[in-house]
Amino acid sequence: MIEDNYRHIQERIVSACKRSGRDPSDVRIIAVTKGVPAEQVREAIRLGIREVGENRTQEALMKHQCVEGAITWHMIGHLQTNKVLDAVTIFSLIHSVDSVRLAKNINQCADAVSKIQDVLIQVNISDESSKFGVRQDEIEDFIAQTSGFLNIRIAGLMGMARIAEDPEEVRPSFSRLRAVFDRVRTIGRKGVEMKHLSMGMSQDFEVAIEEGATMVRIGTALFKDQAPQRNA
Ligand SMILES: *Cc1c(COP(=O)(O)O)cnc(C)c1O
Image (tube, rainbow, N blue to C red; front, side, top):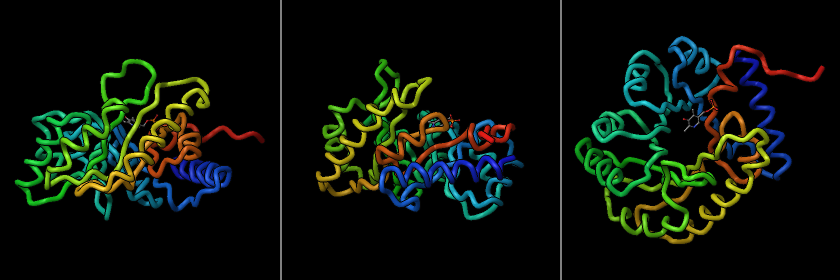
């Protein structure tokens, strides 16, 4: 089941890359395993998945202990202050940094465990007043305030589009985030190395790839029970 889903996702990624003149090896699949039992996570890893995303530190800690292999763990959810130290010990990349306070907290915990923590700035790209994410016009200011933190490295941006029936509806959100990404790439500040653009989920990853995503976070499309619908 997961095998068919995974193959189908890979095919769709290749097609989206073809349509937009991109190299499929520039797009990384983050398998979102929140709520997915460890057994299925192991199955995904057996199939070649190497990057796993969780939105709760507690659940990630538990799986981290019972899932073996050279896996990269991604924190994609909102991070609570009292979980930052745990988060810093297991996650290679934290996608959800959206306040200077959180960045400072991560910096302190990373310092405590002698680590340089890679993070992405979560940007508010949804049209509604979403709870999370730095405003697009405040990114430069955010970077100015956080780039002095020596134990974090700002490695890119993350965005979450609103849920839309037709993924074309959220294309403008992705293209705006891509524009912000291109803009801040040129800043050239110490501790800032804009490499990753994390956008696109099961609903909209193809559109996100066409607009420049380098990481897509896919849960449902990979772990759903039903094999993907195909037109015979
Ligand atoms: C759950 C989640 C995803 C994956 O969503 P699917 O629609 O299941 O692919 C991606 N990103 C974040 C931040 C999530 O919380």
